[in-house]
Image (cartoon, rainbow over all chains, first blue to last red; front, side):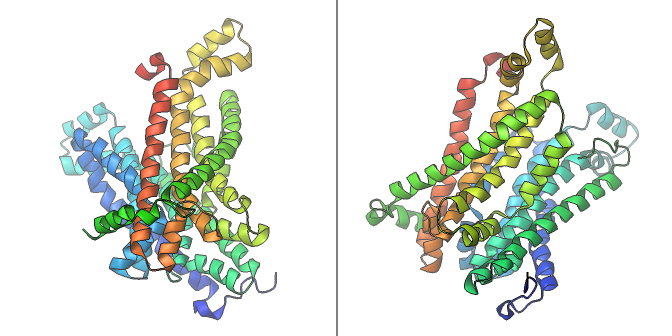
Length: 216
Length: 221
């Protein structure tokens, strides 16, 4: 296991630096995806006819392989972090929109009527009633988006070493150091599992009314 | 539009239509990789999902396995397996199967759990053995959801099988990887278009399978 954490100097980064970079490249897109998908999902809830076409477009976007997406974007944003983050944001969007729509739609009509009867306007009703009740569904979507985003960042290695921990894979090949590939895979997997666990905790904090046992 | 020009240029170049690097050959390789990976994943995921779902046990363990499977980075796993196992199909199959098992496993389990318990009880009351309860009562009702799990697994496989090209194998990923290194964007865009089209075709195939296999009574419900 010697040299497991010896990061080759061509990456010009430390082990923890790579972890930070990896998290940044993976999580900013998920956040961006969440911010964009909330209004889109709300539109889909308000105008039902909008949902099937939106679902169709997002399915097509999801079918584009990440590598191809990266390479096509090089033409516009160069071999930069942005090129890695834009596709990841799109994939997050694809996972999050249906999750939020289903979550917001699952709010019972009586609950909405009660909120209206209590004098809540549409904006407050959305933020104080619909969104909190939809939290479990949204978090479920966020978990899938976050884990796959963390896993996909590695592919960015192929476009000029923009893959954070994935760059170790290239070095493993270059310098015949398989332990670097093991390091990359294990660290990425652990980051994904930790991020997943954090989201489960966030859900528990945000939905204190839910039974703890059924939490998965 | 830039991208549309690339697509047009790629598909109208007749040299892209024959030979070992032609679209038919690469498409066929891609279909073979995808089908093989989906078959292995279904062989692993379906029986486990059906049985655990039938008995209603092990849901938490399955969720853990699924999270672990999702957490493993496909691309990293591919490179690692290539270093360990050398050239061949196995280094490609392992990440693809690990990618596809979680959706199949979890959806099959959920599908079996969501079957209305009263017909299942009725079947048992009529003296059906457990195996027939599973295959003749629960399975037909759970089929639409099970198919949706297989469908999302298949789409992920189709779009991820492109990475096989990174370890010197074929498939549509060849166009993307070669195009990247040759700075030939028309090739990259063409390859991406083919993969996206294949994913859409997969959607269509699963829709047709669902039409043919799901019993009309279940579909209406």
